Image 1 (cartoon, rainbow, N blue to C red):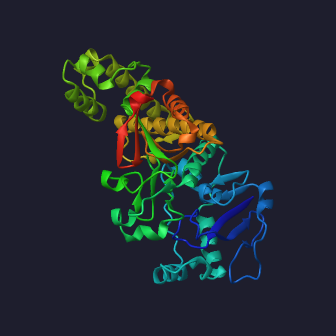
Image 2: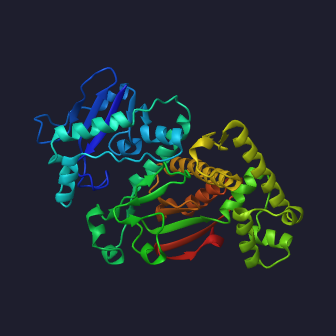
Length: 414
């Protein structure tokens, strides 16, 4: 087994940035005392562009498989961040410090290829410390989840998203250094407490873009197309409790049971989901009676077995890993896990479908998917994407525009 830690030329640029690249691979063999480097380019070494593909025949562990994938996708890799997250329910808190690296990083933040200025001896010290802290045994459990989620989001990151000429005015000048061939690259953090990926890089929070900043994102092909799920959380919950809302509006459906207006229905529904379901509602609204029974079932399960399993990948949520656990917390974690796991499956299907086409999935936002659409792929491509997303009656609305901030509804056209 080899622990592999990539050292990119510039620690502050995205691994996919045109001005970045691999400087070296730090390697520690499980059976050996001393680590070694595979050098691509570093002034401390007279070696250059050493072969690393022989590692394809080895079993590899690394702190972040997705980052490793950005220069080469090795065959058999365990992600140590994933192992830590699986065991603890929390992301790995990398508070490992190296005084020399911290000093040089603070002093020369804007210097290009900083990691080639930092001596290999200091990289060795830091990587060795990371390896010691992250050396967590792994049973091989949930490898399907690890491989699928990393594959799905590696692909989205590699596509990047094109930005407008005035992107620095829309955001600020800090974004300039992160633009590569007219694109920005996002970076999904997969191992969050809830399991929902966050997404930010540099000074841009891609997961929480206000409308005025969305204008900075434009198509590389012909137009941007966004598919938004309608009442996604409620339809996901309906899957879990075996309830059919049909194709009509979920909030209209529930309003008829509440005997209230559409707007009041929306407010009442979310209050019930996150504040508790009263007996009167359970008797009046069949959906919420099923939700109530599901919540009690899962609460009993986690108390009896000290764990509960997610619905698609059977990922284990351990009671001990969550503070102040209660019925609604268990419910919310399971819903968010089901949302993410459902979307991973959809992303992988879409990526397979889009092979050989110019249209690309460029941004994911929990209940929305943004595509850079090429006219030459034809409108049937959009209809096929819509069909993939709407499997299991997860209905979508669609928008089109020449920037992400100004889009018009095209739902009826598809």
